[in-house]
Amino acid sequence: MINSSELVSRLRAFVTSPTDQNFVEFEGRWWTVQDIARVAAGIENILEAAGIPRDTAIGVVVRSRVEHVAALIGLVAAARPVTMIYSQQASTLIAANVEKLRLGVVIAEESDWGEDLRASLGDDRLGIILPVEMGEPRQVAAVDHLLPDPRTHGQTVVEVLTSGTTGAPKHIALGLPALVRGVEMLTLGGGIEGQRQVEILFAPLTSIGGILPLLAYPVIGAHFCLLERFEIGRWVEAIERYKPKSIGVTAPIVRTALQEGVPAEALASVEVVYGGAGPLEPETRRRFAETYGVELCWGYGATEFAGSLASWTPSLKREVGGDKPGSVGRALPGITIRIVDPATGEELAAGQEGQLEAKVPGVSDEWVRTNDLARVDDDRIIYVLGRIDGAINRGGFKVLPETVAEALRRHPSVKDAAVIGVNDPRLGEVPIAVVELISSDPAVTGEELRAFTRQYLPSPSVPATVRIVDSLPRNAMMKVDLAALRRMCEAPGTAAAAR
Image 1: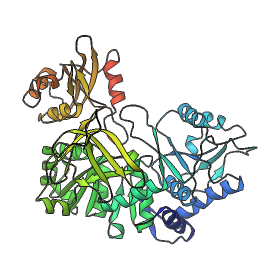
Image 2: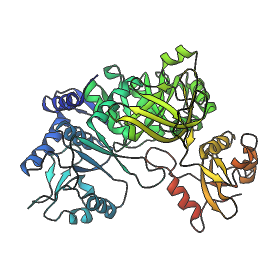
Image 3: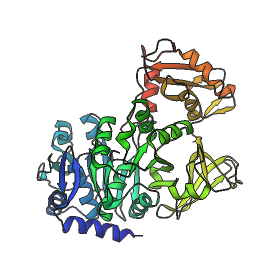
Image 4: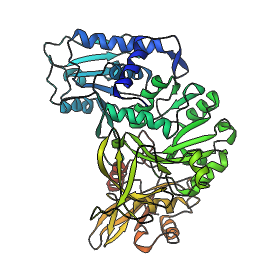
């Protein structure tokens, strides 16, 4: 166990006492600890020369590239607050984010320093260019005076971005205690093997799934392969090249591996697979585990809790006599979870469904209520049933979108499905399902899929319409982008059509 000061001191030792040991492989090339330290030092030298106070938030237009690995580790090691800026948007929007956040310092790749971002600097904002291939960081222009930071940062804070499944990514501020908890949970909940293997990092560095492993690797002496974005072919190539014993996945990765027919021998080295970041239907879990001969350990967490709250582990499966389909394991050490009545806040007994609350050291000493509907069984195993805030109220009946989507995924022609609620003059809301097929089979219709769900769903949960699209819109974590999906369905002449 480490504390906040130890996390910073270990990261500082990493960048101030560099070695020639390999640290990160990116696009076929290994970069050493010395390479990371050189870029981190270059950024810190510019900040110190400009007299940037230690409590000033440093905005970083983050991309999942090796230069950004160095920048993020270096800034946290220097105990400087970091605010992530979403890079997958137009340059005008990046500049608008900088203005809205009133950031006094901005770090971005040379290609991101377009006219709009440069114009946002003025004479009161420091800009730092982060050259590709670990070049020397340099200042954009002279600064006359620094824009005051309207926020106060009592401790080092990393403001990460949510995945943006329901709208634009939002900032979640994580203090040092939360970062420490997140780093520790990666080992308690599985997924980091230290020097015994090369880790594979595919999650965006802006996300909790990217920044926590990144900060953990220097602390535990791990080295890793960084993928700029998830692509099934590159992911498989990395596994075949480095032969890890354990890997991390998300639900879309599991489904894609099965649908694309990734051969079992490609994952021959893998013994344990840790997953989370969304629900995964029991049948798909079983198929994946059997197809690849792995122990699949699913879990549950959230950005605001700095990572995992609960997870299956091989030892837990041995304790309770195997997996329990549809569950996310037991609360991780140090974390307390309870289920309460949403209306009264009264704690419910085992087996009863209610709203999940958690008490997480380093994040909050009080109970924090989630938006998830859940239950806990007599073995303290947790079942997450869906999001309460995403429930569709169909004439007084509660419809959980993920339950509807799971029913549709049971159809052999369905690759993936997503469900949204739309206004209805009679019932208030009705569920609309949007489906991506495994192949373009003209014989499969929306009405056929709608009828198919009746064997798994009560009548109010049967979608009013099932629309078939060429591909569902996804974000960087491969989750379905529900805001984009809604725009797709509402746009005139949309490709989505009930057929």
